[in-house]
Image (tube, rainbow, N blue to C red):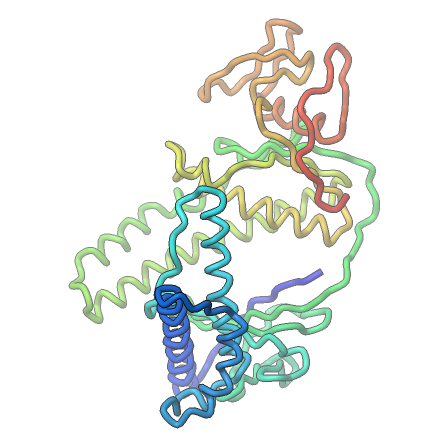
Length: 384
């Protein structure tokens, strides 16, 4: 399996300028490649990823394009690959009948990452000085803060620049699985807003609400941006402070997700979660709370950790898990404000989220409780 490490870079002033210049050239190349595809479509000429990659050698040796002579070929190939992925996603949305969203030209704030795809062989980039520095083609050895050890085989090295003004190395390595000892326990996980997650064994995980906690500071930073004149240095500085506030909230949320997922994976062999349409829920009246909880990121992290630990993770159809009684299987309609499940048929009374978690568990692992039949089913398995 692949594991991605993200480490902070501390380039010198000259290196920072060189990284910015390289980033700008790659962004310009992306926009030029996009324009070529648009012009080719209008002229009835098919322009593909293959044809654009073949043209890279000529561009690097073209005297009219001297800026690209020293740019590593793999970085230009990565640009073409990213553009091709954007078009593939566009065509997929068209086929599904969704709003397609044609690939857009990138401005300075929307093109922040480049990747050396063959760094495992030292081609273009490498980790040097025992992990204290990273060598980048055309840039030199850049100081890196490796805050934890890496394992596995190096595959790729990317460099990204965020809105806070920081540079990071994105290092992908192929690592072996680390199976955890069997504990012979299964659990259903129901994610929510009032409580972040309820487990089928009655345990509750409180919701830290990182965005709501930092709301006052975020609003203050946003007002400061609004008061600054567009295009001014003071506005750019205010935007950077706002970005750092958002980055802090995202870091708190991500840290919570990692710790919660690791705790669940250690305690259970088989884990069941709802196959939620998070994007759809994030467009509803609870959009702010849903985005603050970050269910999609949590499930992705939980899936990754389950795979690494050789645990079974099952996604089930979420339909009716909150309304169905886990004791007898009858449907008991409840509004969002009703936090306790009370079944008039069998007399069961418990927290509604725990009841939903029990239904998720039963659907995933084909459990039939006395007095009821099995309903629903697993949508698909990860790590069967």
